[in-house]
Image 1: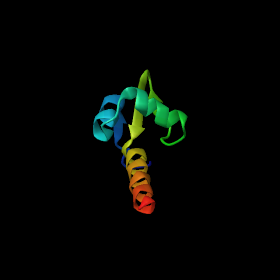
Image 2 (image 1 turned 90 degrees about the horizontal axis):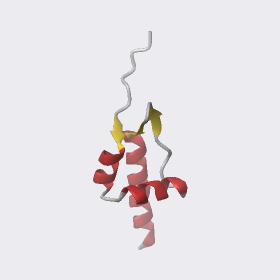
Image 3 (image 1 turned 135 degrees about the horizontal axis):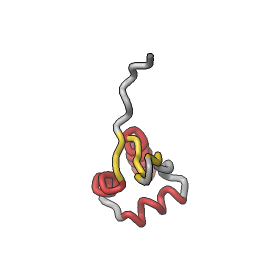
Image 4 (image 1 turned 180 degrees about the vertical axis):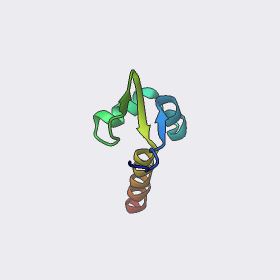
Length: 67
């Protein structure tokens, strides 16, 4: 039996609040390939916390190279 812990999943509201963006912007980021599509659980859209962390790390790296 696999005993690995489940990844932490975030709701649309949690992601938009954490990134301080609108729901529209969230789905634009997905459409542009900047953020992975959510995991669907029933009718809910959920994002692994690790996907959000990778997205933020990439944005920080881009910011560092623009100066």
